[in-house]
Structures are given as structure tokens and as C-alpha cells.
Length: 177
Image 1 (cartoon, rainbow, N blue to C red):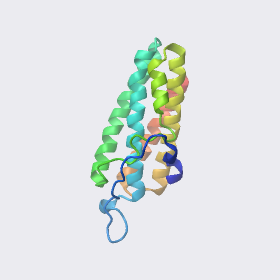
Image 2 (cartoon, rainbow, N blue to C red; image 1 turned 90 degrees about the horizontal axis):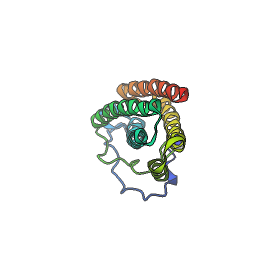
Image 3 (spheres, rainbow, N blue to C red; image 1 turned 30 degrees about the vertical axis):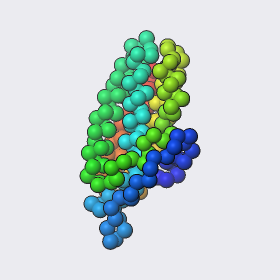
């Protein structure tokens, strides 16, 4: 999972250090969540938050009703997923701040991408949107697969499996346009 995170190359300053998750005497985070589970949840939350910015910008940037509708549908799906991720993260008793928030990582639209999308129209906006969402979808699939292989909390692994299925469907819908 750490190899897939790639959050060291951000030009943005890192947030203040956060305390590690609670650790039991066995070395595992309290409540059955492993460090991998907690890190995956943190990253998935940060990725979905950034994806929502892209998804929410797109309907006003295009005159293509199918593309605008896809962005709206994906936005609703991501909001539902984000609620599930946050609820599970709360259960994990992880740190209250997310060390991945504000970082540019693989699969996340950068600040420059968001600015370009906010200014673009038509085919330029469609290109920026589809490129950013494809990267988000592909990286989300990789991370969900890594969580399923290396995580320990059954609820986190099940959510990762749901996200992998959802992203595969989303990629198909994006490619169909």
C-alpha cells in the first residue's frame, strides 16, 4: 500500500504530524483495524474528496448532456461511498486529522488540474475531466485491491471490494462516452 500512496512528491506543505493510531499490546491498532486498514481509509477519503471537486465542476463546464449526467451520477456515488468510508474510519478510532488531505498523490487531480477544469469549456473540459477521473478510478482500483490483500478488518476489506466493483463499473461508463 505504501508504494501505491506516492504522496511524497507534493509541492504543497505537509500538514502537521498526527499521532499514530492507538496500538494494543500486540502491536495492532485497537478495534481490529490494522495500520493498513487505517491508511487505506485515510487515503480513500482524501481521494474521494478531491474527486468530488472534479465531479462537481464538470456539469457546468460541458454542453454534452451525457457527460454532465455522468458527472452528476458519479458525484452521487462518490458522496455515498465517502459517507461509508468516514463511518468506517470513525469506527477505526484513527487520528482525527488525515495526513493525506491536501497532498497531490497518484490518482488525485492536482490544484493545477482543478484550476484548468474550472476555466475550460467543451472538449477541453471533457479531456481534463476524463483524464482526471480515469486516473482517480484506476488508482482507486489498485488501492482497493491492495486493501483486500493486506488489510485485516473484514468491514474495510468488504468496502474495498465494493469500491473495486464500483470503480470498474464507473470506468466502463466513462469509457463508453
